[in-house]
Amino acid sequence: MSPPVRLETERLVLREFVPEDAPFVLELLHDPGWLRYIGDRGVASLEDARAYIERVPRASYRAHGFGLMAVERREDRAPLGMCGLVKRDGLDDPDLGFALLACHAGRGYAREAATATLDDARGRLGLARVLAITTPENERSQRLLERLGMRFEGMARLVADGEPLRLFALDLAAGGGGDAGGQRKIRE
Image 1 (cartoon, rainbow, N blue to C red):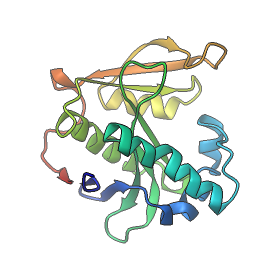
Image 2: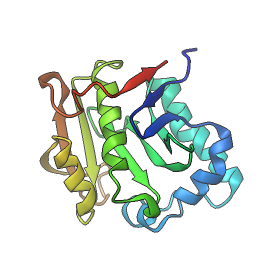
Image 3: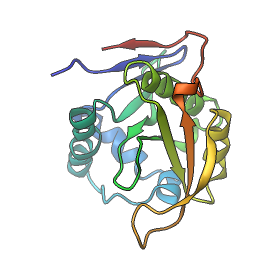
């Protein structure tokens, strides 16, 4: 088994979720922004949150070598949100996902975490392309995706009768996204 992945930026630490993160996951999955733009995941208790951690991010780490990671403020390890890559049925390439507690929005944390994730996708994972999906009304996330260098490709549905989603893509092989500033550190 590979050692846990840990990404560091100037202000953030991104690390694999562990069962002890259940209280934070419960809080995040009940944040109004999560419920509005991502949806209810049926996580109503700490037990549900631990099961979610095992079923979603930890299962992805094992299956793909990547997944959603806990985002913490580096200076005090305060949990802020999650960010990482997700391999979804219905999409050809992994997609970038991120969510922060509303109280931490607007401070550049999502961009910093997403940039570190894209740098890891290009470097350690050697991915050529990363996607992202948003609901049509999630304009804030769409603006962030565009600032990261992603381009709108059209509308997509993950399931036949599902809500239409805006699909963005980034060609990592062409040097798109991320930050060539070298501020990212990857620890495996």
